[in-house]
Image 1 (cartoon, rainbow, N blue to C red):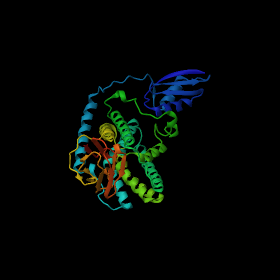
Image 2: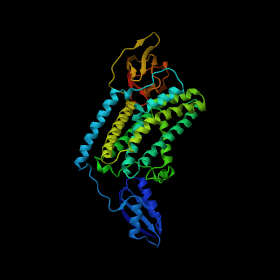
Image 3: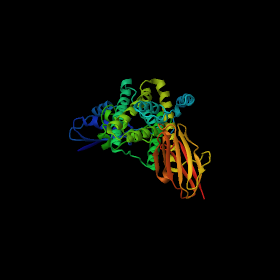
Image 4: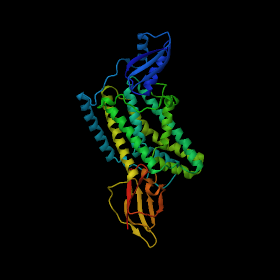
Length: 439
């Protein structure tokens, strides 16, 4: 068996390797192919009928790549136009951010104590354009913008189709999983450390995607986060148009059910309380359906820009994704360690226990810092004004407290046994508070 080593330019991920391998295996005499994007080459094993140089070149060209040595890329872009576009993108993003704050998009909530399927759909609509956009929307924007940037030859329809399948998978997956937790009457409630780990991981992925999108660091161009080849083939990443499959998009959408989003967890709690597969499924189905317009609009933007406008848009998207990523990393750190910048407030005492009164609304917790005595039981009374918001899922890792707040009065009891600070937060680590324990 003969071995041919061919240098290839343009491979950037495992899916590129799969495409090169598939095209080369079609050639007569080729028995085995091993493409290595990290080394910029392919190893081809042949029988006696060895393909010609022209056949090899054409097969690699048909896969979307070219024969040639992998170029060593610089750390920073040497094109000043890139930096001008980056400044332009930063200015546009800053304006959009200011407008979003003025219109209160970061503090949207459903301020009602009533429940019903209509409310669930409304919560989904709000979640799709507000704080949960930092989690699910950030990932969607980063992945879709990167895919569109890598495939400028694709039509707007081809670029938009993955978002339809992503949201379809999200809606179907949420319905099935919602029915499941409604049937068993118990939601999967991971610990604060697990939520913190996933939030941190998502944040790092977002920053990586964002840095690739702005293209100020060419050295990252051929760096990627990939699945093992076996897993990639199971999920269908060796099919369709370079690194994409309908099944993979649907699976990704369904798995967002497990992301630590406060809105999602509030709806999961509602589904659990239904005690019914059908009701639980309907609740999560309507919630996911409500989030679809917001997520489709974010992903759809990546399918319409071309040329120079596309370059600026990708930079805007890249900066936004970096911002979302840093936001998630900061929140994750609070799930592990708590916050250090909270305004102090008073607490109330009784003869047998310490009574702490707090209000939870769309802005977080008021008041959010309490001074209490060590060893004296605490009755923590929380009045939830907006139970269908991110802040309605409260966690205190030190005492393994994890509770979804219902509209009205909620009571949590625990006994502080050590002097120091006991942090608490929402499940995303975005809204925070603490108890200061003294002797």
